[in-house]
Length: 524
Image (cartoon, rainbow, N blue to C red; front, side, top):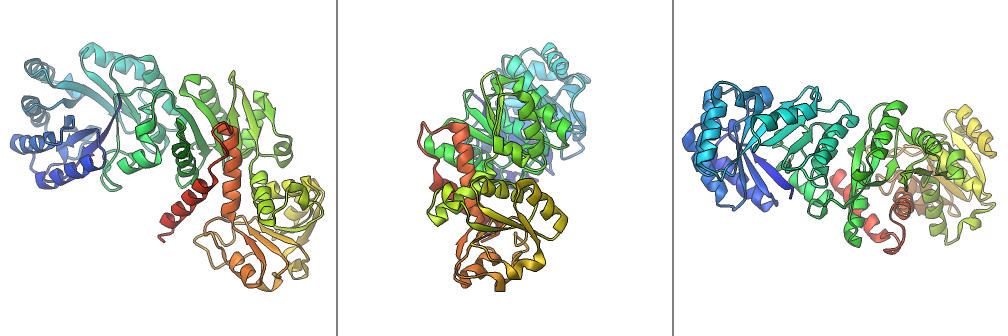
């Protein structure tokens, strides 16, 4: 069983005891007492802190970290070793000593003797590299086991890229017995969450945003509520959003809420894949080579949508024809073999949102006059979806040459922004970022261009009601929020990932989750 450990880091015993209470209430499964944070470090303060922690009934690790490996204070080895010896004597479940320091002086002899006399305590031998990956992770693991066969190796390093995490996953997959292997920083986030699926002895989560003891620690609340910690097991199927950046993506909250609602053993992760095509390809190759990780599919966002199309074409199972026309893929499904299939749900999400608002099917869009603002990636998907069903589209864009190129590719019309006052369209769709939070006082279409007989659709979803939609509603037009497109494209992805054996995608849960996330993000 993998434990969720919350480190207790405070400058005084009283404050640390308060944090112990909070950690137990937050669902900690193990407490790590980071005694190196204590300003007045001594055996008496550690005994008092340990006794209080034991009253929770939770297992306890006592750590007095060396500053060279992330410790909070520059304390001599003799003092740090003395703290661990006192913790063993007082009945700590675990003590954590740096492997390098274990081999220094007579530390090994002292700790080994103390543990032999107090058999309740187990030794964790740790190694940390805050600069990059270890030169040979497997050899380091073997060396630690050779130094103390009963010790739990703890190996923590900083990946330069998410691709550096796969060595950690391989070690967890290929070893038996208790071991801790984690990656720090933004690129290593998934290693902290996947520790439970891969059988790691424990992972760490901070009590709150301000009390992390290593780069990349997320809070216990995020681990348990957002990433479904209590429901992860070795059979959990994985999904995720690939992009750069991904930290603020709403997709993990949305899909994980859906999995919880439908009692699906699934987990959706943010996958920070930095770099361009070669890095993306390397990441996908790493995934495909490790079917035991259990990834079933991916959402793909900036800057990798075109890379995803190329990868899906090379993987050779299936690529949706309209995704080829659009030139990007935003959804990858991992099949048997495994083979990769590529889809674009952006166009379907926009088209479905429009059809739902107008109470028509997609064929009802045939011959409808549509004005599309923008000529970027979102506009490409929307234009392709509309032209595919015979809508009459005109593209408006600040850079006329881009509008012209898009219109020529999809055989529709284009016009400069100056022509908006002559616009005669039944449907107006904003595919630019104008009006997105925090620039909520901007709009791509002057209010005087909006009419009561129009349907106005803004693909911006934050805020839910943009200035464009407010002005359209004031003019008497029907309005469609970008949240509708977000939900509809997510529903399409859900069907690709999960199918419909458990029913249609939980639309109400998706919409509720998105609105809740936006309210928190905007401080509403």
